[in-house]
Image 1 (cartoon, helix red, strand yellow):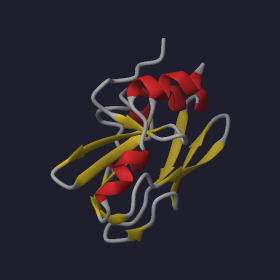
Image 2 (image 1 turned 45 degrees about the vertical axis):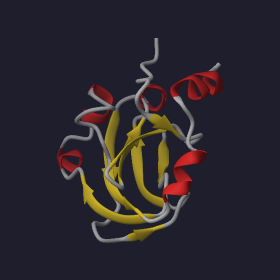
Image 3 (image 1 turned 120 degrees about the vertical axis):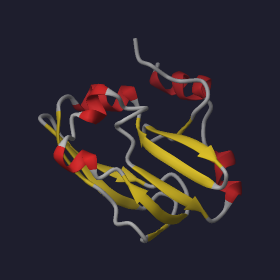
Image 4 (image 1 turned 90 degrees about the vertical axis):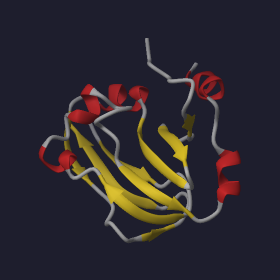
Amino acid sequence: MTEIPEELKYTEEHEWVEISDGKLKYGITDHAQDELGDIVYVELPAEGEEVGKGDIAGVIESVKAVSDLYVPATGKILEVNDELEAQPEKINEDPYGEGWIAIIELEDESEISDLMSATEYENILD
């Protein structure tokens, strides 16, 4: 059974989003990491980079496929999870915890309304 935490928001590109104090932390969902299989490499966005909603900012490579990482909202990359460069498997082991990708300073909070609830995300998986 795929884990879909209720308190998070989700994108159609299978990313989870946690919002607090004008900042947005994101990563890929349990479903996405399961579909990818064993993750062997992660290319992270650059800290300080200005990104737009839907931009490709990074890549995840698994034994099965290479997938682009999409930005869930417009803003500036404040921090990236550097530990993933040496230990990309953290995404498989703990996608909602130690497997986070980056933190963005939100530019336009209205973009949050485009994100899905846990229930809405679960519905697109069926």
